[in-house]
Image 1 (spheres, helix red, strand yellow):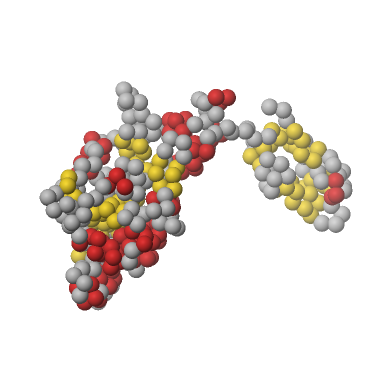
Image 2 (image 1 turned 90 degrees about the vertical axis):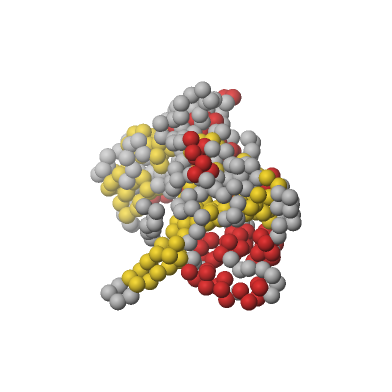
Length: 370
């Protein structure tokens, strides 16, 4: 690749080069400080004014230069040809596209090239990549819901075959899954539900943390659109209708269509119904209530993420010399398609969700089963 020249701006006139601020081999942008010079009027930090890699310094500290003099040689940045989808996945996985060689026409980088570089593209006959865990339990398919006689949809309670452990990345049918979990104190939410009891009971309903969670998550989808997205081979589809599939602790699935349009009371009414047939193929997001501790369910087919709320455990959360504070500690987990979301996006959603629910996040949590 042909080198090009960076010059001292002519408007500065004569100047003495005091110090180089960029080194050979460094990647510079138009605003990167390149050299520090002294003119008759002032001291200046001269920016590179170009984008590329610095390959040669043409003057030394102490040199007297005139306006327009050559300062350095640089090589323009390599032009990366990649599909929009490959750029999105590379950004989510933290991969520098400039380091990849594309397998597409003219060296164009595609989705498969990025996933292969991340060790997430596994051929059927090949062993899993060394940095990707593929335990049998985590790869087990989601149990299929079964319609019951009363029209509701039944599903067995979540088992270890349908959950993944914290921070584990798995590959199932070439779909990279990752998870984020935080411990929360549900006590404020439980107290709020208790104050709503009288209002809900008059309508034959029950105020629960789950109905509050479904309402809060649906309200946040416009701020976190990729939670409600779907993966396709050519693009990531952002959906504007929020159909939330909810798995109750008794194993029953309920599909709440347009959950973002309902109040918390309306969602509680939907969760209490047993006379509807639910087609989970319509779901754009799922929420699972489990009696287990520190586990999360994978997303339903065609969805980007699944939220899991564990059963609350009474635990001490703060103490001093005279006082012990006991809270209702639960795990709030998000399992997501790593092609669509990344850890920062997952944690941002979980933090916003806790803020909307008015629950406290805990810096650490002890597994009571250990």
